[in-house]
Amino acid sequence: MKTPVAFIIFKRPDTTEQVFQAIRQAKPPKLFVIADGPRTDRPEEVQKCELTRATIERVDWDCEVLNNYSDINLGCAKRVSSGLDWVFDQVEEAIILEDDCVPNPTFFPFCEELLDKYRYDNRVASISGQNVQFGRKRTNYSYYFSRYNHCWGWATWRRAWQHFDIQMKLWTEIQEGGFLNDILTDRQAVDYWTSMFESVFANPASTIWSYQWTFACWVQSSLGIISNVNLISNIGFGLDSTNVTANQKQRYGSLPTEAIDFPIKHPPFIIRDFQADSFTQETLFRQSKLQLLKQRLNKLLKY
Image 1 (tube, rainbow, N blue to C red):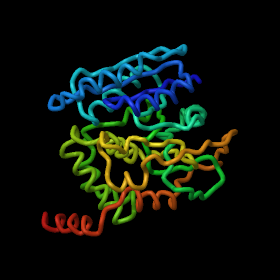
Image 2: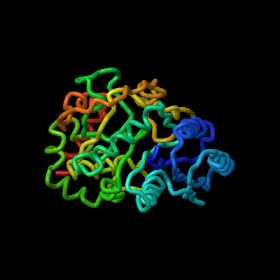
Image 3: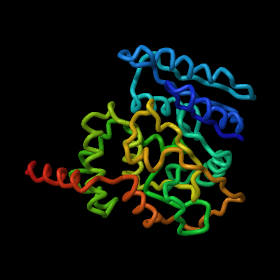
C-alpha cells in the first residue's frame, strides 16, 4: 500500500481499536491521526480520549505517524475540517476513516486504484466504500457515479478538498438563485437540502462537517464514486454515538461488508446514476410529510 490514511478519532477506544486493526492489516506508509479533545462539561471524556489516543501508540509496521491532537474540544465540524486541512497541506491524496467505520480489507486497494485513475479528473471529487443500495445494482461494473459523497470510509484529493468551506459562503447566492433546483430537480429533495443547508449556514460550527462537504462538491458539479458493494460497516450506533438519527440506527447500523472483486471493472462512461441517487434520497435523506409541510408553511410565512 502506498496511499496515506487519515484516521479521525475522539473518545471511543473500543470502536477505535477495531478500525485500527483494519488499518494495521493494510499497513499504510503514512498515518495521519486527527483527534478532538474532551468537552469541558464531561470530565469522564478526559480518560476516554487518553485511552483512545493510546491505541495509536501500538503502530508496529513501517509507518510514519503524524498526530494532530487538540487539547480542547473543537466539535465535529471544526475538528474534522481543520484536521483534513492539515492532511492536505502535506499530501495530494488520502484515504479517510473515522473511529467507527470498519472497512473490508478490499476497501484500501479499491480506493488506491481509483485515486490513481481519477487523480486529474476534476469531474470526480470523492471515492466512497459506503453503499446504501441494499443490493440494488444497475450495472455489473465495480462502482457507479453519484451526486452523493458518502463519508463512512472514503478518499479524496487535495484538488477537491480545496473547495471545502465550513462557512458555506456561497450558500446565499445559491439559495437566492434557486440553483438547488438545477442540481436536484426534485421538489422534496430541494426542500430537504434547503433546510439542511440553511441550518448549517446559520451555525456552521455546531453541525457535522459532511453537509459542507456535500455543498462544496455540488457547487463544483462534482461526482462521487460509490462502490457497487458495501465496503464499510459503521459500528458506532451505540450509547456513545453522536450525530445519529433513529432512521440511520435502524437501517444502517453495522451493515455487513462484502469484498469487491479484482480486477476492478471500470465503467466506460461517467454518468450519474439517477436511479441509485433517487433511492438514496428517498431512504437515507428523507423528511416526514409533517416536516415537509412545516417547512413549506414557514417559507410562505416569510413572504
